[in-house]
Length: 253
Image (cartoon, rainbow, N blue to C red; front, side, top):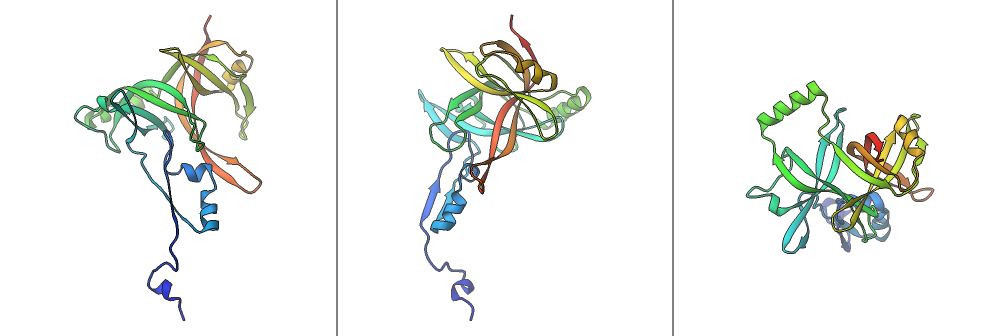
């Protein structure tokens, strides 16, 4: 005879429920990416609820000013998407709060913060928005036409900073030469942002030879990149890296 619990769609027992929240700069999948929560939930027979608050999440209040975090989806010239974390003050919204799928233009600063929650990346990277412009359908059509004609990349960043860690040169499985560079960029009030950058090809070889403390200028784009990290011989977690892909660089004399 069939199990009555299956016929009535009733659970044979009640499970304890664990609610998990993600920190600033992460999303509801962070616990799945960075931990083995699914395995532990099955082993200890608990129900896990990870709340999705990725769209305009209330983040913090500083001197009465509320800030929100979300992600901006930006298309590359190859039409692949980058998902860039942004932080925006409610004072920039005016009477209209942005909603998913709004087409916007954002100007701001790329900043870093330390993550003390123990979940997700230790270094949180976000674009601190200083200006937001809403793009109408007509403007969007004109923008797409100009982009296709001029090959303009809508995702652009400029940094002037100091190499604070010895560059790491390596080759990818596809034999592409790259160098990882950590750049310290000074801003107001004696603060610094630590921005991971990646150089390609001849720039990778060039930056490899630069010493810690070298002042360089870089131009490029912010990219998001999915990768897998092996935490043991049998366990793999999916992670997202955010970095500046360098298209041009020069030493500040």
